[in-house]
Amino acid sequence: MRGFGIYPDDKTFPFVLKACAFVKNLRLGESVHGCIIRLGLDFDLFTGNALLNMYAKFQSLEVNGGCKGCTLNMLDGMPKSNEFHEKLVQEKAKTASQLNSVTKVFEMMPKRDVVSWNTVIAGNAQNGMYEEALRMVREMGNVNMKPDSYTLSSVLPIFAEYVDAKKGKEIHGYAIRHRFDSDWYIGSSLIDMYANCARIEDSCRVFNQLPQRDSISWNSIIAACVQNGLFDKGLKLFRQMLMAKVKPRDVSFSSIMPACAHLTTLHLGKQLHGYIIRGGFGDNVYICSSLVDMYAKCGNIKAARWIFDKMEHHDMVSWTAIIMGHALHGHAHDALMLFKEMEMDGVKPNNLSFIAVFTACSHAGLTNEAWRYFNNMTQNYGIRPCLEHYAAMADLLGRAGKLEQAYEFISNMHIAPTGSIWSTLLSACRVHKNLELAEKVSNEIFKIDPENVGAYVLMSNIYAAARRWKDAAKMRIFMKKKGIRKAPACSWIEVKNVTHTFISGDKSHPLYVRIYEALKELLEQIEREGYIPDTNEVFHDVEEEQKKHLLFSHSEKLALAFGIISTPAGTSIRITKNIRVCMDCHTAIKFISKIVEREIIIRDNSRFHHFKDGKCSCGDYW
DNA sequence: GTAGGGTTAG
Image (cartoon, rainbow, N blue to C red):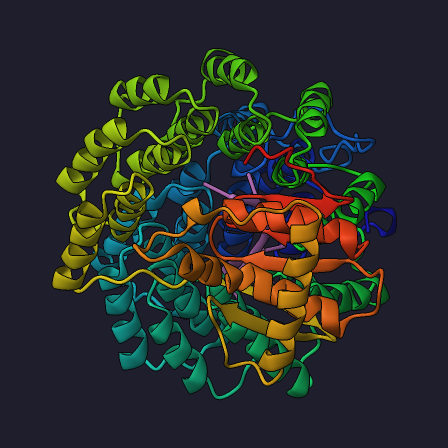
C-alpha cells in the first residue's frame, strides 16, 4: 500500500490487528498500535475494538518479546509530527504496551459499543478472570448497555466452571426472554453448562429444542453424555450425527473415544481409528492421547505404545495416558521409565501424572519407590497431595499388606479422610485377612458415611471368611433395612462386534446350556491338572458342594466359557469385569489358559490380567 | 470492517 502512496485507514487496521494476534507477535502488534496512535485512529471505535481483541488474545499467551523473523518497523514512512505530539504518541504507546492492557485501551476509548464490552468480557472469561468478567456484565447495566447473545456465551462457561446451575439457569431464562436461545453458540454453551453441573437431562432438552444443529452442537451433546458416564448414549448420538450427514471433526473423535475406552469396545475404537486416519486427523494430540488411552483400556497396550511412539510431539496428557496404560497392565518398570523420560523431555508432570506413577507402583508392590515419588511430588513439583493421591497411596500400602502403615497414613492426612479412602484399606483387610483392623476401619467409615454400601458388603464378606456367619448376616440385614443395594458383579465379552454380559449364575444367555456344559468340562480338565476350588471365596454359609457350585458360575467363568466356545482356537479372549477378579477365578483361569492354549486378558476395576501358559502377568499380586 | 460455543489422561 505504501509503495503506491496509500495510507492505511480505519478500515485497514482491524484486519492488521487480527493478523498480529493470529501470528502471536506482540511486538508487531504494539508497533501497529503505535502507528494507529500516530495516525490518530485510536479514537476510532472499530479500530479500538480490534485493539481490545488483540490484547485480550495476548493475555492468554506467554509471548516472548522477540519477533519471529518479522522485524518490520511499522513507524517507518509514516507522517512526522511535531515533537510534542511525538512524545505523546510514544507515551501512549508505552503505557498501553507496558500494561499490555485491555483495560487501559478500554478506558482510553472515547466511545464504546456492545462489541467493546463483549470483547473485554470474553477476554476476561477466557483468561480465568471470572469475577472481573461478571463485574463488567453488571457494569454494563449501569451504562445502559444490554447484554446480548455474545455476552451470554461468555458468561455461561463461567457458571459451568463454577458448577452453578442456578445462575446458569437464570442466564438460560434471560436468553429465552430475549430470543437468544435459538442461537447456535448459546445452545452449545447451555448444553455444556448443564453437563458440567451433572444435569444431563437439561443438556438433552436444550439439544432437542435446537432448530438446527451444527457439528459443534452435536459435539457438545456427545461430550456431555460421555463426561457424565452415559457412554452408550454418547455412541448412539455419534451414530445419529453421522446419519444426519454431519461430518465428524477432530473434536468429535476425542470426545467419543473415552466411551470406547470405558466400555472396552475395541471393535468400535478400531473403527473410529480408521475414520481418524482417513480423515487426516492422525496427528492431532487430543485424538492421539484418546487413542493411546482407548487401546490401553481395551487391553491392547502394544497398540497404545505404538501410537504413542509415533506421535511427533508429546504433551503432559499423552505422557500420562501411556504411563497409566503401562501401570494398568502391571508394567511398573516401563511406566517409571516413561515418567523419567517425560521429565527429561521437559514436560512437567501434574497431579494426575503422579496418580499414574502410584498406580504403577501399586500393581508391582513397589512401596519404597512410591514413597520417594510421593515426597518428590511435594518437594520438587510443589504439588500438594489431594484426596486421589492419598487414596492411591493408601491402596498401594494396603495391597502390599502394610496395613498398619496404611492406617497411620490415612489417620495423618492433612485433609479429612473420606469413606472411600478408608474403603481401600478395608478391602486390603479382606485380602490380608485382618478382621480386627477391619472392624476399626469400618467404624471409621460408618461414622463418615453410614450408607456406604461397599463397606457393608466387605464387612459381611470378611466376617464370612472368618466363619462368623451371624455377623455376616447382620451386615446384610443392615443393608436391607436401609434399603441399599450393591450393583451386582458382572463380566462382559465382545464376540463378533456384539457385547455379551453375564452375572453370577446367569441363565439368560440363549446359549446358556452349552456354556455351562463347556464350563463343566473345562473345570473337570483343570481339576485333573491340580486345580482345587478355593471355597474361601464363597461368602454364604452353605455346604462345600453348594459352595463349589456357587464358585462354578461366577460371571468371569461364564464369560470365559462363552468366549472359548464361540471364537476360533488360538485367538485371544478379552473380558471386562466391573469388580475385582476373585481369587478362585484367578487360579482357575491360569489353568484354563494353559489347557486351551490361549491368551486370556481380563480387565477388572483396577487393572489388567494377562493369562498365558498357566501364568498371570500380575504375578498373583493384585 | 470489530466480539461468542464443543475435545484427550483418574
